[in-house]
Length: 401
Image (tube, rainbow, N blue to C red; front, side, top):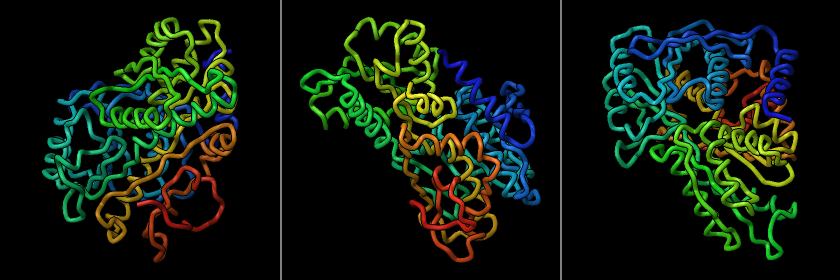
């Protein structure tokens, strides 16, 4: 069994259940960023919720669409843009700081843009925020948080209107604690309950990667029966890098039974490599990641992976909801401009619901119903993956802020 077969099964299911066909997205190239076409097999179909277009919104990824997290983020962002009346213009930066600066300078002179959804990049928050203020275009930051100690917090009176963030330290902590618990339950620990762990973090220059590892360290401090054999880093957050790391690590530390991965792509690279080595990741190891990508969900469903933590792939869509409300004049919901969204732990007990969401039920999503403007006086944003599969017609209960 290989991951490519699972991927094919998920794609086939998506093809059988989705209305419409795949989209092809042309990436911007005004700033010297490489132009390319990207076919999205998981593209959401155009549905009846679409609003009349009100203007273009710049959407930025720090990496490229080969990273499944950003592919999923764009998929949901496109669906939200259609429902909310925006023309989404995505750009993939491939970690190019210079291209980011040139892009924001160009956007400032382009009257088409009514808003932007932007991440931090390699600790460049001061320069990014300065350029956001210069553009004057309402901007929501997300995914990779800004350093509030350096740049302050967003305010409704400035171009930087809001930031969506999650507690990445808690995500990293919960991931390790749940993996260790699973290992002990399945007999993958020593007689005294001791568990040997390998960790593969993300980029050391990425604030998200550092935060998740701080959570990992907190979990280790919390449980004295966890033995950390070594912490590695996949600087590109990639399957290829994690595969190379795992080949060395598993031979160096043969008693390892828990493999903590900073994202799903790293975890999938680990699983693929274990299969190639003739090992059984679903029975010999407890493996988990963060992002809840469709491929990882299929691995959790098949009990090959133990768990994933989801929610961040929807931040682009939620950011567009906030931007929509701001442009519609509904700004009281932003309060201090910081909206915190909890990660969602997905394991064998609840994974089917999320698989249904990401494959079968995605075309039923109406992102307009999460708008404060459309809520007719209800307070709070209800931003969560699980809320997409609930059947009530209204926006419902409050969310985290």
